[in-house]
Amino acid sequence: MSRIVKLDKKEPYLIEVEGKKIWVCACGLSSKKPYCDGSHKLTKDEDDSNLYIYNEQKERKIVKEIKTEE
Image (cartoon, one colour):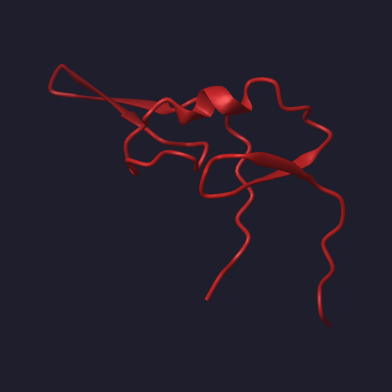
């Protein structure tokens, strides 16, 4: 089953445990989830008024319309 999950954070979460820093993915694009791999850098120039979708190669497209079934 597939689903659409909207993520709007453009940087990872920093968690510190016993003096060790762990960066956790918040953009949804990391190939090393739950850890950050730097893929959030792809989102830096996104326009907040647009909705984007990324494919497996991390290529971005603007979503024009989403239709739902009632």
